[in-house]
Structures are given as C-alpha cells and as structure tokens.
Image 1 (tube, helix red, strand yellow):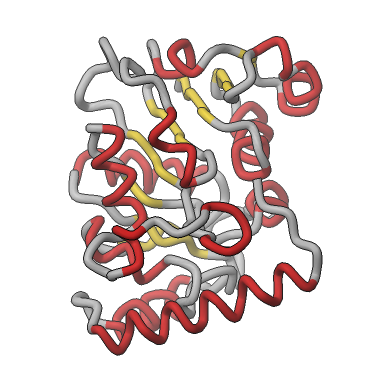
Image 2: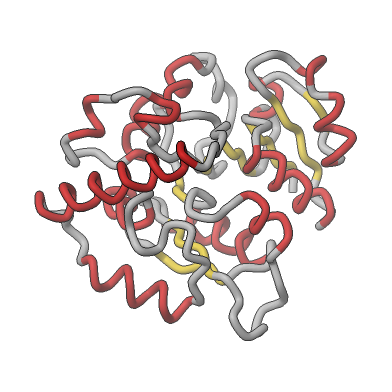
Length: 241
C-alpha cells in the first residue's frame, strides 16, 4: 500500500520503520518541512514530503502529532483524497506535559479522537495510541505466538475498520475491535489497556468490564489516573513528541 504518515515523532517513525520493512511505500511529513527529515528518512526508509503530499495518493493515512497541534494542520489536507481512504488518529491528551487544557476534553462528553475528527472534518480510526513506540517497532510477532500483544481499534466505518485491523495484524499484533469512536475512551491514558501490552483475551475482558457509556464516576477516575501517570512521567523526565 501507499501509506502517508503525518508526524515524524516516536510513533510515526516506529510505524515508518515497520511499514517499509513490510514492503509498503511510505511518505512521511512533519510541521517543519521535508528538508528537516533527512535523518528520519535514513532511519526509516520513508520518503520525506509535505503533509499535503503525504495524504495525496495514499491508500491509508496516519495522523500522529501532538493533540494541541491538530487545529494547525492545513485546511486542505484531504482535498482530493477519496472518502474511503482510512485516516488513523494515534493521539493522546496530555494536558500537563504537553497539550495544555482543552476544555472540550475535560468534560468527558467527547473522546480525544472525536475531537480530532471534528477538527479534521474527516472520519478517523483510533489505534496505536496505547502502545509504546519501541514496542510498536520491535514487539510485533507472527499470529498465534503465545503472549502476542493486542491493540484496540475504534471507529464508526466498518470497511475502514477492517482495513486498519488487517494492517495491525500485518504489523504483528492482534487487532481487537473497541467499538465506535465514542467508545474509544476505553483505550485512552488512565484506563487499564493503556501501555499494558495485553493479550487479546485480557484486552477484551478489560474493555467489556468498562461498559460502553462512560459514567461521570469513570471519567473522574480516568482523570485522576491520568494526572497521576503524567506526574510520574514528569518525575521520570519522559519527553512526549
């Protein structure tokens, strides 16, 4: 496939490495221009381009940039891109370490990816947000391998979801359906599946235990867990990009 990656940070670069190794043609973009991506190109085998060029002609597009930068993407980013091309959103909301407060995400009414979808004006699929970049790049294994990591995939378009889940499997992970985009809160930071590298049976168990409608109590606990995790990451000097 022709795959466009918008964002050359940890997750974008990890995906580029794996996808090129599997024979996909990958274009990668950042906010500073393709001339700044020489090292990334050498490391990943992806072709540096602008964001618009990454989207044009792609069979699948990955948007993997800090959440706070989503509104700054070009308004014509998807001009001429067919409606059936899946768009993956990998974002997480880190209000203390990176993004600042986004009021719409504080109430629990919107999930992170619903907020992204509103700004992009394009349906998105949520995946690759709950796994560390190093694990994404290095821990994919053949189907049937004991302990194979599973990844949740959320979205509203059944056909797009099947394409994305097939790609997850090709990368060496079990794809688990996490329901609609509104249910994708179950894979956000602060929930049991975040960074846990769970096998498929355990991931399905965790998702089912949370239900489909987030309660105010769950949202309050989610925020408390998330804030505690951010403080721990800050104390450890974790850098988010």
